[in-house]
Amino acid sequence: METKYVFKVSGVYLRKIMKADILNTATELFIKQGFKSVTMDDIASHMHISKKTIYASYSHKTELVYAVAHQMMNVIQCAVTQLVETQKNPIQELYEIKKYVIEHLHGEKTSSIQQLLKYYPKIFNELKLHQFEFMKGCMEKNITKGINMGLFRDNLDVEFISRMYHVGMTNIKDDSIFPHEKFPHAKLYEMYLEYHLRGIVTPEGRKILNQIIHSNQD
Image (cartoon, rainbow, N blue to C red; front, top):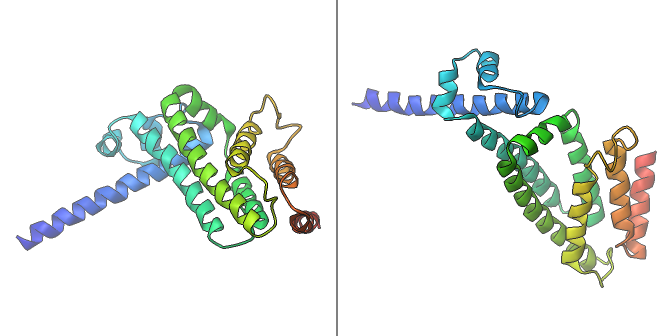
């Protein structure tokens, strides 16, 4: 009786490991090749397992795409939350988040995101809504902290500024507006962040901002 119980627990544990391996492999392939381009056969072949094994964890590809997309979002949100909790001043905080975003997006093909939008619009729109709510919450805390520290102007409409920041960060990714050849991502994020901060800082905040900019240029 005891042996059977141990075997059952081990089986559940192994299935969880396999499911996690499938998710991680699919994430890697989807990012590199696109959500539409990669098939369940491709994932099975890459992992040297049968397609039946994949379907034991994910009943269809859309379910796997959903899991991958949400894992990608959760990884970013957890990292941003940790950066916010380091208690840096709000100007440094935004530069640290910008640095993480650029490093995270390095090597990530825009085509994979475009395929998610085109072929899985329901998943894309759900992620977009979650992203907006998360970013809006982070920015409201950031702006409020900056006002309280005397680094941001005290007459700011916190909700308006947080929404405008999201609009800007979302739209600078549009290649038809900011073609990558003319506006490389790293430089574009840098320019937008300075644009955003110069509109809301106090003279004291401007000193810190200038120090950070000069430090990044050295």
